[in-house]
Length: 276
Image 1 (cartoon, rainbow, N blue to C red):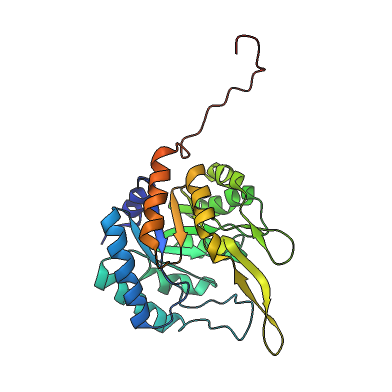
Image 2 (cartoon, one colour):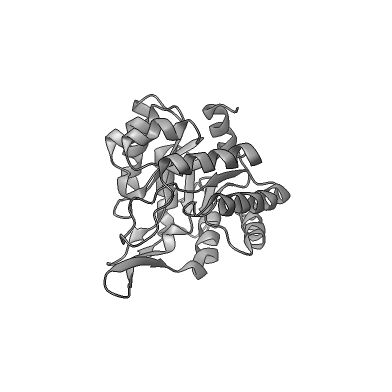
């Protein structure tokens, strides 16, 4: 079993980036195993480091009518099956502090949902497991907030922390991706991940038959956001699988190898003179 620090260092050094991927929520054991098999075959072919992601409970669904998942106990059993069957590291999210300890028995990365990115007790509980902690930036937060959130994890004794861009509220039912956040998140001094799926969410933007609302999204723009984030420079990509996942990943890898986005550009801001 790879230690959290060893996995963390491996992800930091991954070129051109690592991938967190899988179905948003566990629908069934058979479905998750099929997704893990297919995604792993693609990433092995391309030489990408994969961490398999799926949620046992989507506790912050917009609508009470939406499927949440199988729950903690059953969900962890399924994720353990993925881990042992395919020899893959696992990332899944927690919503309450008590979940961190049982989740840490299976997961290699504990993810903090965007809505909870400032919750000190949750961050500290995740940190104290010793596992890698991936904190999603709140849709309502400036990137500078993530510097503090990452520091909460470190102050709890865990240096293995990552931060994740997942869009910023733009009005009531839309998110935008501000590429400047990718640069500013570097101030947290840890790997930066871009969630190119949930960044395209349209919160509470879909009316339900019979009343109420649910969240939708602009999945057709995933290539646009993914290209942008990779060009600017990220350490990891977070996404749900697509039918033509291999084709998109090949293009993103090509972009990443051309750009120097992960290296800070030393811009010369002195006034331009006639010697220019």
